Amino acid sequence: MANQEHIDGLKSIPAALHEAGHATACLALRRRLRLVRISARNGTGQTLCGQHPRLVPGGKGSKVRVERNLRREIIIIWCGILAEASINRQSMKTALLARSHDANMMLVLLAKLAQGKAEQIALGRDLRLRALELLTAHRKVATAIALALIRQGMLTEAECRAIWRKHLKKRPNRA
Image (cartoon, rainbow, N blue to C red):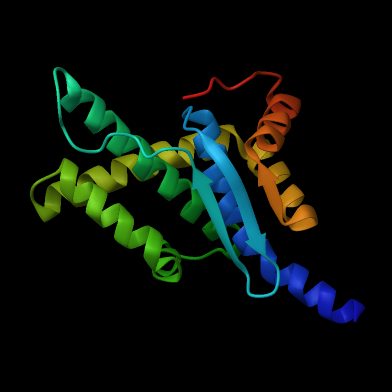
């Protein structure tokens, strides 16, 4: 039985890093985070954010806010993909294929921001670089969240914020 638990724990490492990447980005970008969880059995995970931000224009001055929210959501998606790819030493193409739900969501959001395919690709690359900078700056937090996920299987927003404070000595503001 101990061997099976060890194997299950190894399966959960990529999922834990992936979800920790999303959670770290949510904290850094002041996006409300309700819960992060992984399943050790099948190596999957889920990051649940609070109410989805406005992603369509409606009202005075909302176009800028919508664009900011779209960019923020794409960076959060990229952080999960990049965190997982870093441990597996995967190419971006392989990492995106492994997380097709994230990749499809990113394509939908990019299409709302940029018209042509070339513009979408350029914007996607720019936001990937921003996500990489964010993840690099907060690597200790992401690692600590991943380790806590492997141990506990699930973390609340308060638990993630406690990890943030412990490692960065700074409290993230709530979105």
